[in-house]
Amino acid sequence: MSTFPVILNELKQQKYAPIYFLHGEEPFFIDKVSKFIEDNVLDEAEKGFNQTIIYGRDANVDDIILSARRPPMMAPFQVIIVKEAQQLKRIEEFEKYFNQPLETTILVICHKYKKADKRKKYLKSAMAKGVVFESSKLYESQIPKWIHDYVATKGMSINPKSTVLLSEFLGNDLQKISNEIDKLKLIINDNREITPEIIEENIGISKDFNVFELQKALAFKDAFKAFQITKFFGENSKNHPIFQTLPALARFFNLVLTIQYSKNKNPKELSRLIGVNPFFMNDYMHASRAYSAMKVTEIIHEIKIADLKSKGVDSGYLPEKEILKELIYKILN
Image (cartoon, rainbow, N blue to C red; front, side, top):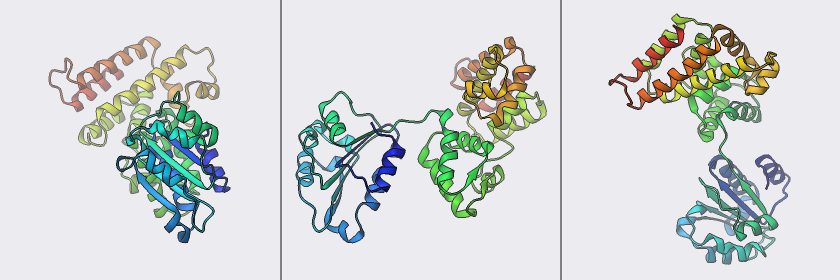
């Protein structure tokens, strides 16, 4: 199966396949491929007679096949894009067309939010005669690198702290992240670095009060800073909900524990082992020295208890800000 960069590169070289079956849980890549085909294969004059957008809920497979078998009019190709194809009934009936697709038709099927069954014959036929692309969700640990690479495609640069700020604040919604980066490109000059200050000014993410800075304060046992950030989170719970803060702290201390039990203490090699940008390794290394392995194990246990309390288990009706404050106190004492 093809990858997203390979597909885009071939499309840019005008190497077209008769079938593009795009499926999977991450809609961002599916939308990017279909949009590129929609915008670039035909010119504006050719699109009037030769480009059709169909929605799965309003269509049936037989009608789509009938349209796909028509030759183009005064153009080298006709383009048919089936959006929301996961709503199509009897999608397996595409097999008869996939076995003998028309070379002058580019049929794009966008099957979003879930994987198609790769064991089915119709998908194997599509793979044999065209392009099948599975668009998978990225892991949280992959988001900062994706942000870095996406920013580079826009002719800008971004430092590691800024990638973490964006990923922590925006989560793994690639469309939302790309929208914010696209806005920044309109605001700042090309070839300029996206810094925490620019993010704070234009997106509203505080460069000083975020989960990354909370982890740093805990690593260096800076109680004043840690409780400052905790207070800020409590007053801005909409942007800093406890259900996002606790998993980030759990991941941080789990990685600290991994470092403590690792025989290799080289920061560069450890950064590869635990999947952390070398820029941040000083915080992890300092925490591994500031806390004993037994204490880190206790901290991870306390985070789990705080998580249960935030879900109403043995919480005594404590508000979220008090649960987090109690947790930070236990970590530092």
